[in-house]
Amino acid sequence: MIEIGRLCIKTAGRDAMQHCVVIEIIDDNYVLVDGNTRRKKVNKSHLEPLNKVLSVKKGADTKTVHEELKKAGIEIRVRGEAKKPKPQVKKAVPEKKTDKKNSKKKKE
Image (cartoon, rainbow, N blue to C red; front, side):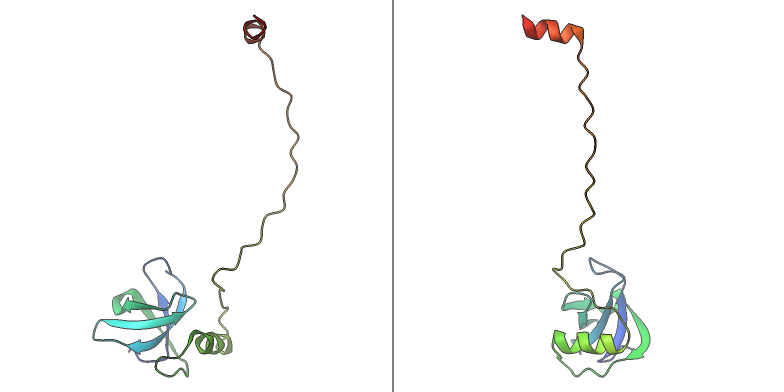
């Protein structure tokens, strides 16, 4: 089921629930993936294979993988891109309440 070019979803780790493509089969348990995840050696049990196989060659670079993902209609998440900041709204600063007890101590 796992082959080079197989589109998968990562199910564990920091990149969980992200699309990735199998780039290389390392051994019976591990594969190299790239895509919306970090390019990394991953345990096969941490992948959920999908029904699509992309036309990616063994050891393809990240740019090629991203192009194939776009062709498949999958949005590319660009790493290092800053999230859109929320618009800042100025809040009214409430006036400070003074305690008579504290104000007397400060005067003395």
